[in-house]
Length: 232
Image 1 (cartoon, rainbow, N blue to C red):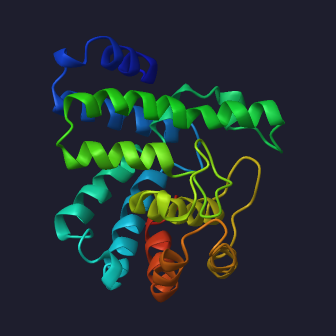
Image 2: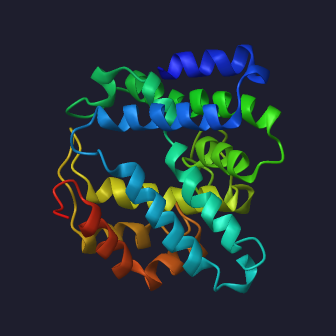
């Protein structure tokens, strides 16, 4: 089932779909989006593990202990798989373009947030009390927001950005920096850590950057174990 078919069925008749069917379809769409990039097939798996590791470390901060329970972190791990589900609707010639995107092409890339947000909003209407659905919506809708308010789609600032999205924002950028993409070569772990730290208070929540800095070697270990050419 394509992302457009998933979106249309959820928007038109969400009451006819069971949650297990919706989750299965969204997971398939997310994987299809990633599989179009030969160099990035394990992105979903990596960001799930990164999110869990970072949230577990962040829980040591008293300010976040109440929200970051074991159950919450487990749901965050699973919800991370859907953060880029809207990319299935982005044309491949733009998603995999070699070279800098034109302004109008970047606007099309940004639409993946709106597409995923709209789809998961319909799921949330039916399963409002389900924490996995709620977190999936939050990650999809807000993981491109920036701490200084210059992100998209809503230009949220600081703690107005939901905590799980602040976690995913850092995780997503770390994985992007480390990964080979059609338009760039991968950065090493040390250079990626430097970029993340430089982004504290600008792109990222400083408290999330601090937690990342405490376990950055764990990120390197996880990435090396799950990179595209890793042998298991």
